Length: 171
Image 1 (cartoon, one colour):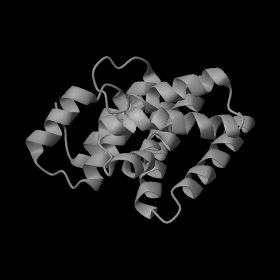
Image 2: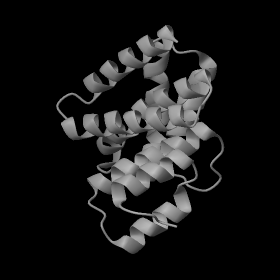
Image 3: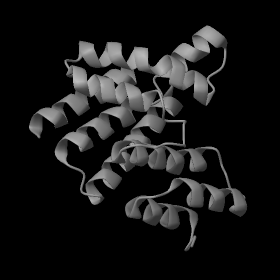
Image 4: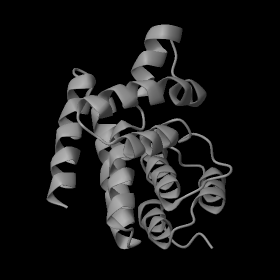
């Protein structure tokens, strides 16, 4: 467990360096990590899945920078396209194992794909990212918020956090 915590801390620092001078992006991935960590723990993920989830949460948007450099934009699909390669380089350099890198890159490459979600790490990453994005994008239309809740949220903890953050029962 201690080794995992140390790797997560090193990765968080590395990601902050990667996005140096961009506090909005840094704060985004830190918030997604924090919520992913909370949801994963509350949902009683096993230690390895929790480690994968937290790692993926930190690097989930790593493709934004490269997409903006290459295409001048960073749509969700471009993030999914450019992110896995960037994540793999960073994770390998920091000593993450091959199986871990493979799963994290899969999550990075699919975190804007909401159909066919496979695995609790994938589900929780999507939920945490939505919790943060709804706030950061200022989404307030109750029908849009209700639709996201109904279509995306599966975990009991994710649903509870959504209700706490965005008000009342959605069922």
